[in-house]
Length: 114
Image (tube, rainbow, N blue to C red):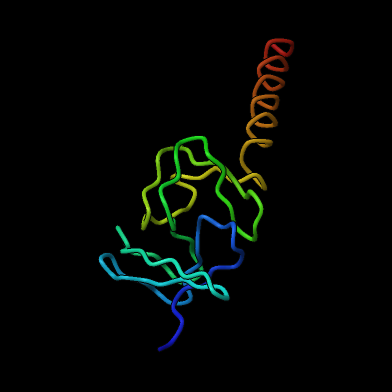
């Protein structure tokens, strides 16, 4: 049996697709003696993540045994996990502040110029 998903760390609540996966497909992600079996609720493209268990809104998404982001909404086991339902730590929340500061700076600048 070929591997179609990978679990990277025992603490992960997401797995990564090693092939294009289809809605309704039963997928097993395993690492050593840990095996997690889910039915996909939607298509998941190669290299993308899907939830191994339910992840509540605001809860951290864990990959590599570390938080990589937070759920923007409730994510069900088998859901595709991507930018529509997960804000990454790498880009997301810290850049929200930067964007707000940039917008505020631009508004201030416009008022001084006019």
